[in-house]
Every structure is written in structure tokens, then in C-alpha cells.
Length: 325
Image (cartoon, rainbow, N blue to C red):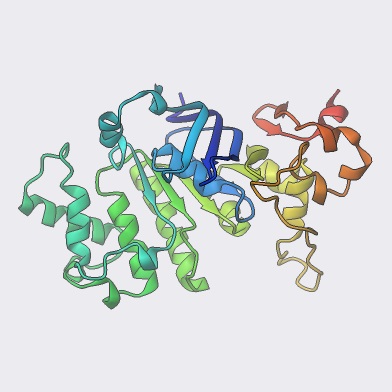
């Protein structure tokens, strides 16, 4: 049974003028305990919006208008805010994007981890909380005594580790890492990836990695969800996505990634830009940038449904659907 099962998730943002902008439409995926999912796509495709919705932490203008978010079989969209607070950090936790700015600069790192630990449901006293904070820092490779220091005394990589320690404070079963390697140099990125892999194995975490970096996905993820324009483009295991991608967007995205086997090869690019929420194409979201889109009237007129083309392999493309028929 999946620890996390998202079905037909659809999210809108309301503008000040009262218009509803469709940010995410019909996204579905599942995740088993101890497995990892990579969520990839260009900026603005809805990755972070989907992750915030799992914790019901969307901005005030955000609305989940359709779908289910099942955590251990319980629909998180049907429970009260009080019940949801018991799941945040205890069941599902998140490492937010931008660790450089995630920590309060006027409080010690230890005090901020203790604040997460002293959750009403944890029933832990102050002395135990201090010991637990030290254990968490040690778990992510930071000496416990450094917890008395302030964020400005930490390097970028240490801040990222501290934020990961904070996310693990209440022993969650699902950990979401939103762009965990952004703004870090290559060596520190490798260390953070290795740390997340180690933590996943030691703690049997269900791990969701949100990233632009296909190298991180190839290294860490069992399944991959490729998003474009707020919709699912392709969803399959990592081996299938990297070796047998079917959606034109996934294919172009992979061609734009450097190949160390051919260092002199020219990188491909995807012409155009992702669609704006207030100007979405009426048909396939990728059609204006697709090399095949202009040839097929249905691509211009009708949004493709997600279909299963092989066990565990889903994609949303009229051309693939036609080939399958």
C-alpha cells in the first residue's frame, strides 16, 4: 500500500480581480515507504504548488478544487485543520526551498530545531528537546555543540543540513525536499545528495525530491514525474524515463542535459517559453513548443488525457495515444 497517493489533483489561484488561474490540473502519483520520487520540470510548472498542497500550506489565494491526497489511506483534504496540524512534521515534513533564508538569523540553530521538536503531540521536556536537537545535528553531520551558534556562523551547506535536521525532528514517514541543492557549489551538492540517500535508507523515508537537476533525479529517484504547464507530461520509473522517454517534452528535456559520454556534443534547447497561467493553450499545454504540435489539429484543440502505455508508465500526449491505438 502506498504511504502517499495523490489522485487528480487540481489547484487554482485567485487573482485580485477575482479570476481563477489554473496552476495544476489532474496530477496523480503514488509513493511507497522507503521509495523516492523525483518531480521535475521548468520553473513555473507547478512543482512547488503540488508539494505545498500536500501539507495544505498553499498561499491564501490558492484553492484545491478537485482531487484527493491520501496519506496512509486518509484523505488530507477531508480532515480539519487541527487534525492536519498533527500530520505536518509528524507524518509529512518538508525541506523548503532556499535554506539560506529559511533560518531565523537572530535565534540559535539549536533553538529553532527545539521549537520544531516541542510539538504539542511530542510530549517532550526541555532537557530531552536539547538532547534530541543535538542528536539531529549529529545525524546530518554537524557537531551538536554547533547548535549554540547562529545561522550566519554556518556555511551554505551546513544551513541546508540544519534545515534537513529540523524537518526530521518529529520522525516523519514522508520527507519532501524542494530544490535541496540550489545555490550550493558542486562539492556541497554531492554531500547533500549523499546525506539524503543515507537518511532515506537509515530511516526508511518516503522521499520526494523537487528539482531542475536531472542528474540528482538519476542518482536518487526510483520514480520520476515530469510536469509541464501544471499538468502531468510523463510518469514512470527512473530507468524508463531516462532510457525510453515517450513524451516529446521529456525527450527534449533530456537532450538539453549534458552527456558526459559526449563532452563535445552540442546541447539541444526547447524553443519558446512555458505558458503563463493567464494565457494557457486550449489544447495540449506543450503544443506551442512541440515539434509535432502544429501538424495535429487535435493537439491545438483538445487537452490530452493521461494514459497508461505500459505498467506503471503514464503519459499525456495525443500522438502517443494514437500510436498505442
